[in-house]
Structure formats: structure tokens, C-alpha cells
Image 1 (cartoon, rainbow, N blue to C red):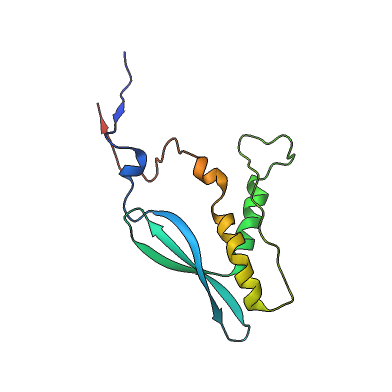
Image 2 (cartoon, rainbow, N blue to C red):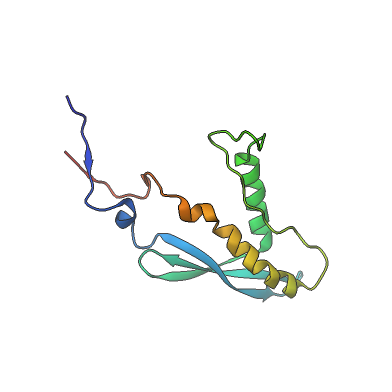
Length: 138
């Protein structure tokens, strides 16, 4: 007795919708003035279908996300990582004094590296179940 098997004529990536983001790069910074002056990172997101759009994030958004990811996925013992843990890439530290524009501009290369690590280019997903459209069953 054989189990039903799903047929795919295309790879998982080929089956993804065209509006799925595939890369993100910091394109620029933008100053916001008000009660508190700060800078936003302008991030260009490219989609599988060749489109692109911009999103805007403050450094604290990166920092807060990094704190959450570290708490959730960093191994308790770095010498013995568990199956559901990983070593997080380093994030540039917070800077409280200095020229805000220079600080923001100096963070761009570091944040671009943070958003795309060497491991990303080497990782091949086994299955993209949530994003894959339904397939035929035999």
C-alpha cells in the first residue's frame, strides 16, 4: 500500500506568489523632526515578481526585534546549541551621544549585513508549506 504523494512540476520558489519579498536593502536614511528628532532607515524590499516597495524603520525597531529573537532563539550554552536555537548575528550597539546623521549613516552597512547573513545564502528551504499554493494529489 502506497501513501498519496503530491506532485510538483515546479520548485517551491517557483510556486510562490509574485508579491513575496525576497530581499531587503537599506537604501537611505530620512530625518524626522518634531518633539524628538530622529532618523528612519529607508528599506527597499524587492519581490519575486520584480516589484519593489519601501518601508521605514527606526534603529530601535531593529534593536527591539533583536532582543526578542535573542531571548527566544539563542542557546543557553553557546557551546551546545539545541535543535531550536541559533547563534544570532551581532547588531551595532546603541549610541546615545553624537551626530545622529553620522551615526545613522555609519549603521547602514552593518544593518545591511545584519539583514542578510552568510547563512541566508547557504540555506535551502525544505518546504514552504504556508506560502505554497495547493498541489494536486495522486
